[in-house]
Image (cartoon, rainbow, N blue to C red; front, side, top):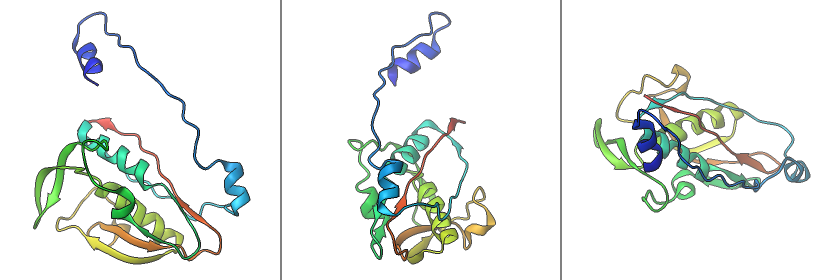
Length: 174
C-alpha cells in the first residue's frame, strides 16, 4: 500500500508493481447446488464513501462474515468476525463508542456489514435471535433498517436446507 501511495503522489512515472493471487472459492455453484442451495433468499445493499481505513475494515469484515449454515444453526456475528486486530487486517477508523461518541478503534465501521446483514436476514425471513441498536442515528442507512441502524448479532437459519451468508464490497476514498 505504501508503494501505491508513493507512486500516486509522483508527478511522473506513476507506476507500481502489484502482486495478484487467484483464489478458488470455498463454495462453488456446483457444490451449492449439491447441498440444496438453489435460490437467493434475499440480498441487501448499503453504500459507503469513506476513508480508506474504514473501507478496509468493511472489506475485511465482509470476508470474515461469509458462512455456510446448516438448518437450525445459529450465526453469531461477533464470533464469526473474530477479534479485531491489525494481524487480521483491521485498521484504526472511527467507530461508535459509549453514548454516541466517535473514536478511532480497530475495526471502526464494521457496523456497516452487520447492518447490511441484518437487513438481508430480515428480508429473507430468517429468525433474528439478538440485535443491538447504535446509540447514534445513522442517516445513510435506509428507513427500512428500523430503530436506528440495528446490527445483527445472532440469527438462526430456519430453512430446511443449508443457508449461506456472503457479501462483497466496493468503496471509494472520500
